[in-house]
Image (cartoon, rainbow, N blue to C red; front, side, top):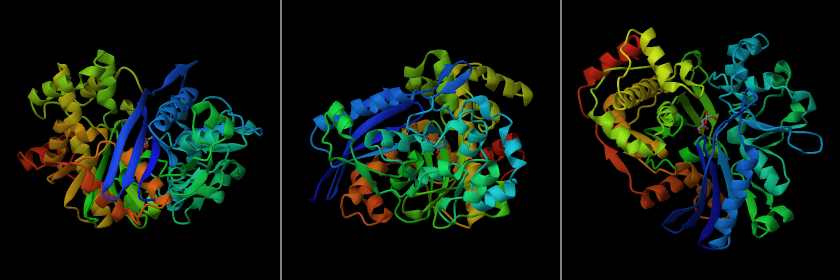
Length: 484
Ligand code: LFR
């Protein structure tokens, strides 16, 4: 075979899509066959994902994918940290809770009484985020009825195949995974009261999970022999696969609802400095380490657009932002007050009041504030990542939906003082497709080969730093009190 056709199910926090990927010699082509809404549903005071909606839309997308021609494989990736619990019969115990739900408020402190932050970092290498799976499990009401924990892509994979397992890149985001041993940490699970038996055996990206269940294949009009293949099931792991880098002198920003900002390494960095800077060592495809930090990302702007009823007006709002005065209002986008959904404009106003700034007076001014603040956070994070690893970089690769945001890309180049290469947009789906194609026999032996194929088949846009570096130094001291 010299050509492979696979379906990539890529679930993001605000939308899901099913793409058909074609891989061949000098060919890497994606066709979107289905796109659907995803988002939090508040019910009885809790924020959930609508998991059955996601399952139904996944099937609908796969049906459309199969209608375009036979599929050689199916792979699923999604956001991280969230999970479903199965009972002893293999049935789902309630809807998975959304990581932005407030049930984890104050929980971290409780868990840290059982295991110190130092011990946690030494084993898992993970950044402290209030919604890490370990903290969600400490707030979980249904643990005593649960037999199995499945991360979101593993849950959907289970529904498609009947087979359980824990894909490694996503498992690495739970804070229950030993980053050096590359296995669940039984000791840690025991210390925090998570039954080890909940955690299924680890599978690697590229491993075949199994064929489709006959009834699923029948319902969706799919060939039951189609293999479901584990990919880098954490969307960020898949998107880093598709970074079109030439060598290792690059930093990446996987830019979407979140911005994941950092470097790709061969080994974790578990120093006190990395812990202090709250850098994470998440697992990547082919055993790589994603040494990065979560920056709040386009979430803040998405929430403002939602509040203005202007979800479809992003280009207009960005044009207004481009015309708004520079450095007028700056915020730390990672301020915890921006994490939860709702009332985002008010929360920005409150941040301004707290920091002695005049709140942005127009949509354009507010969008400018968010984008400049993001660029500042990128600059700070990229510099820290280099200091913490000794790695120097020549280019910032921006991948994902945010790579289409020209103003943000230019501000990023300006703030970081480095050229930005923007694209591909659908990086997670591409990474998903590439890992499947390799598992099926495509001659893509390593990440270098996969990235070369992305480069050969996708147009990238280059942004060169402009403006005065001193302005960004001043902006950084304003927000963070001193330069990094
Ligand atoms: C991006 C992402 C991030 C993760 C966040 C929450 O989509 O997967 O990597 O920290 O969502 O799961």
